[in-house]
Amino acid sequence: MGVDDLLRTTSLTSSTKPRLRTSQPPTTSALVLPCLMRVPMARTEGKASPVELRYDDIPRTADERATLVAFLEWQRSTLARKCAGLTPEQLRTRSAAPSTLSLLGLIRHLTDVERGWFRRTLALEVIGDLYATDADPDADFNDIDGADVDEMFAAWRSECELASQVIARHQLMDEGRQRTGRAVSLRWILVHMIEEYSRHNGHADLLRERIDGATGY
Image (cartoon, rainbow, N blue to C red; front, side, top):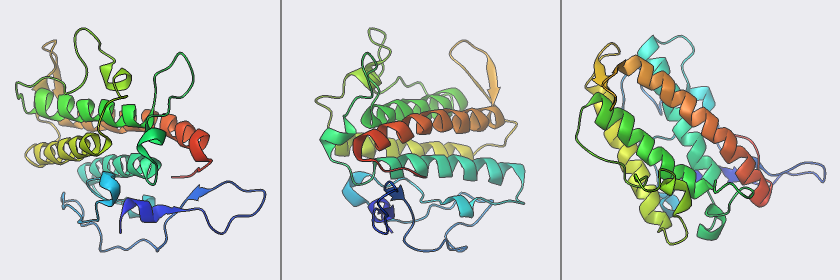
């Protein structure tokens, strides 16, 4: 099931707003935990998340690793749902001046975040950001007017997949190095990434509701 299939605005009353809801009940076979099995799903308008995970799929009694990974996958899926069904122009819609925040900017920002924490910090790959620069650290948010939407979502999916491969190769206590030289564990990175996505999904909530009134996760 593609991400756009999750956007349903029928069954509305005059006093309700569009809701982001699933069209089918959750299936227990879609995710095998605690492994990192990738769940195939349709690439609808290039906006599908690497793994489609619904809230009810998050394990309630699994071990620490499985729980952390599932929450991260759910946060990724939530961002994809917030972007589903929108045009390139809508995805570029800014929040409110002077902020340059947009849904497309969030995708670009979180692409750099996935790349930086998992590949550069934990796996110690010598790579830079894709969008942010020394001249403009906020270029991920600022330089979106000419950005190709399909390419941006493909880059995000790719970095999420590469990040999950890094996760699969490491234990929670394994350490990487920040650019400052400070040691940081995979456990800390996973908790931070859940916090990072949670914060920006709150931004995405407001951006999406402003665009077409859709709410929910």
